[in-house]
Image (cartoon, rainbow, N blue to C red; front, side):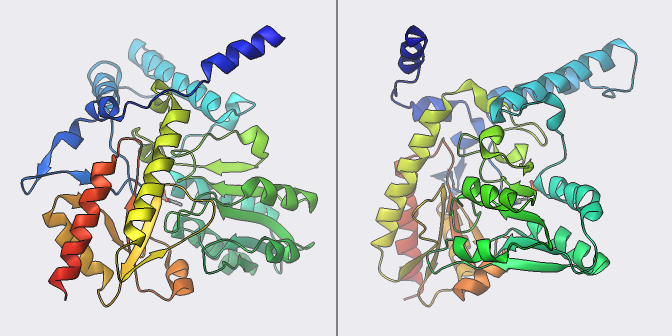
Length: 364
Ligand SMILES: *Cc1c(COP(=O)(O)O)cnc(C)c1O
């Protein structure tokens, strides 16, 4: 037993994360935009794909493409095998107990809709309640609003404080015998807040209420163990975790712990440097954060920030990020959002800072 532990401790010893080497695997990052190196900071919308994912997709269409689970011919068998092999890898990646628990959809939006309109629809009757939070993506609002309108149920919203953290005590008080589902985001795509979902799931289960987690920004940036979390549904998107739509396993090729650590350091560095810029306000300053940095600039509309940064080859997102209730909470029309992946580097944060100074100069 002790021998086993020593062995695994040795395997987990941290080692330097070779980000330069990781970058080489992503051909798109070699591009220049307007003569400047591409600085891709829109990973929360979709991540870039490494060469082996591109190769795997090409290989599939060149050698295997056919109807999965339908045909009785050779190619159909081959395609089905690849498809099912991906399911096993995902099962392992999120530590799902049974293979059948892994259900492929086109992404998070479709997954949440599926739950809302199958399981959800059968759980609720008029007057029942569903709990979501004030920091949800529209994907985790609209399906429940549709169900509300159809069934006459009530949507209860967990409020957030001015750092962008949920009020857990208020959430606890919201649960009652009418509550039928809790559906909350793991990591906010606007604020970067990591919600204490394990604790929140435990609270819901104490009240006999099942929980869906919107993990679109969770799975790409942290180790997920669905058995440990004890969630009832965990929805995520392959295209945000370096894979093609519906498939999220390639990520296994690298040391995921090291990648998480690297992203964490990068976020801290970005927060420190950006917060020293005069007139810049960071939106979302939760104690537990991941990979997302939203900001606004004094007297400059967020929509004016994007095009100027684009001149410098910097790709980030400006807008409400499909999360308008959050904008309302912080009383801003929109934010500029830099979101990081494992292949981003400090030099790109420096380029962003330089770009922001240029934006400020243009508007002063
Ligand atoms: C991107 C995102 C979604 C939607 O994911 P799709 O892949 O577009 O369906 C839902 N929730 C969050 C938090 C997201 O970041």
